[in-house]
Length: 86
Image (cartoon, rainbow, N blue to C red; front, side, top):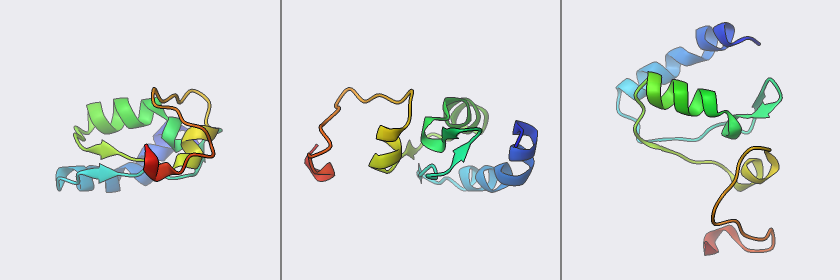
């Protein structure tokens, strides 16, 4: 799916939600053009935060964060460490 179609189909719900003042958005586990949504810097930063003005928090499940290339975390932990300990 190209970006124009993505914007036409999915962006309107985000526009109204951001305008309503939502404080947290959780990117889906799905992918767009082969990249997990949690790793979509263009969509999450440039479109959601800069273009739409979202000022809240983006949260993600641990699995897509660790299984996506291009995502790093300064507080990386081993897979055996429970998520609630960091």
